[in-house]
Length: 205
Image 1 (tube, rainbow, N blue to C red):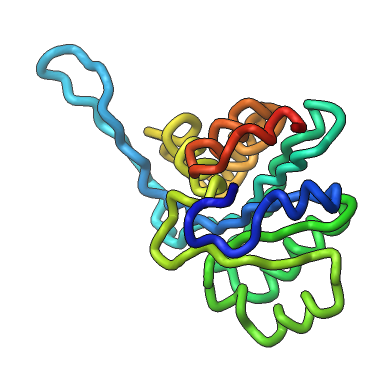
Image 2: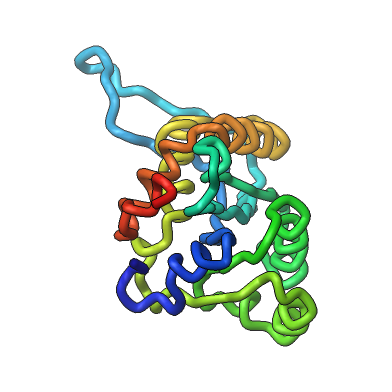
């Protein structure tokens, strides 16, 4: 079943032997994410960041779930792109082209109501590519999007306390963290369950 309030149903993708893609955008700043950690008494850890550029690195990704894939290793996938600028219509369309190149068959795309997702140019692109069928998450409900957990996991497990010296270093580290996540299909299954989706289709039932 789909999370409450989400248009569409992953079972439709099952019947069409298609895929469900949960898409989301995020940003990565130069200011390090400081989490609770251990240190000798009286010696508070200090994070030093010399980078003056405060522009955030932007990213767009999608967890792709193929509920009826015959092989477990093909059931989940993570696709992403990084950008130095904010995510706008051009970047969204570029990522959709990326998905269409790498994901075969019909795709039920689930995303939020970001302006770039609803722009006239995006709607024209979707009208030309009938393999993509779009659905919207309910407003103000980020926990219903499994892809939100991708960003949370990346920032807490691969980028916490990281202090890049240059924009290129931040980009390389984000690329490395997301690439390392790609083969971890059990992680994506956990994200989908955490978003409230039924798991009885995870095993191809």
